[in-house]
Image 1 (cartoon, one colour):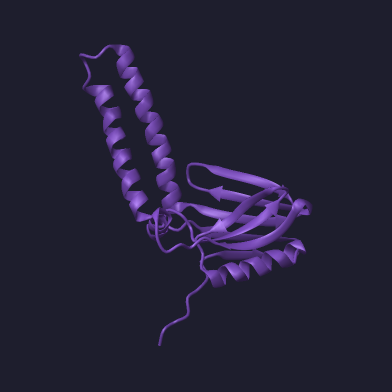
Image 2 (cartoon, rainbow, N blue to C red):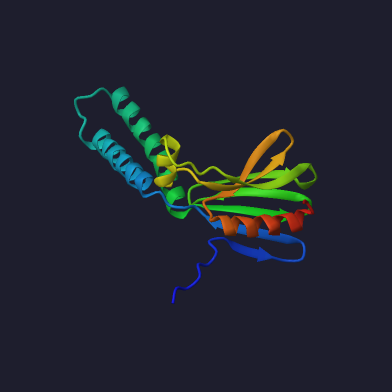
Length: 178
């Protein structure tokens, strides 16, 4: 007999706060692509440090700085694909959206009084370039969004429709929105 699928998101709920943590859905195409770029530019760092005796010093420094910069940003993207977590925290009249990764953390805070509605956005398509990106898991099909002023903010994505409905109801009950 088939076991029912469990939720991807982890929910921590107290009287005054709720935290919803959703891991990033992995895109193996991006992971392989970013790994290859990281390896190539790491090779560039090694080459510029040890094997470029006939190049002028300024050229070696430029290659080294460029390679280190590219390696940092590709490692950042690679670790986001492997260990990234989107976190939604609702407490004290604030809604915080965080993207957590081993190399960086990005947090945005929104006033709960300015949040208009929480909605589920289904962007699934069956053909075209967006369908290919969704198939490769580079973009998400289903997202939970909210309206903040005249802007639509994506809270989380990469989840199933039934999980999105449950998270939406949970967020609406904590924010007192319909």
